[in-house]
Length: 157
Length: 113
Image 1 (cartoon, each protein chain N blue to C red):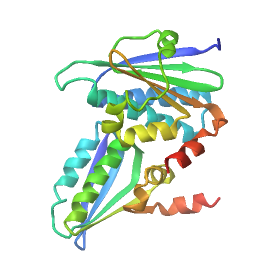
Image 2: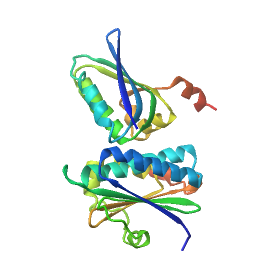
Image 3: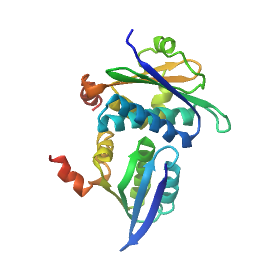
Image 4: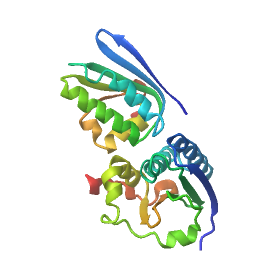
């Protein structure tokens, strides 16, 4: 198993903290050596996922929490965003993340709209896990050696 | 993290200068400011985003809503001062095909390097 450093932040599920988590992502991406454009992509993609969690995970009066976990590898950054507030065992949760399936993610597609589209366009890989809330798992490779973005873009157009 | 929306009316054009970050927290502020004028018949609105450092789909959502309402009232919306990043957001979402947008002048030059 590849070695990685792990950083996690837990924020109240309130809109004013989306920017706080975004700053953390920005700092981590910068530490890993992502380009300016890639850092901006990561900021937007993770903000979209966190915004979704803030807006849909809890009722207006609930005091929920969102966990944002980042695994820093030499060649990539993996970000996991969970709307059910409990810290996760990164490896264990990752095992249960399935491929993106339209049927189980109807809620995201319907309400996430543009946000979901941006996540998929700006990241190399986006997966969802629907159990005790929603967990979003996103990966971006350093140097964009995957070259998947262009493939996705043409697939969507 | 802050957002300022300044209104300067010039020759019947409602010119808004938006400064700061547009995200889930600040988008409602922007939406509220724009809602004050969106029902004016044949409104001419210009939104200057040259000093917006960050924007995601929450901002795009506000602009799409504003565009729809203004257009249905016979008006016109123009979004100006887009830096490379913001312009790309409008491009990849296809909104650049629908809404009248304009890049920052300096960005045009940078783009050709």
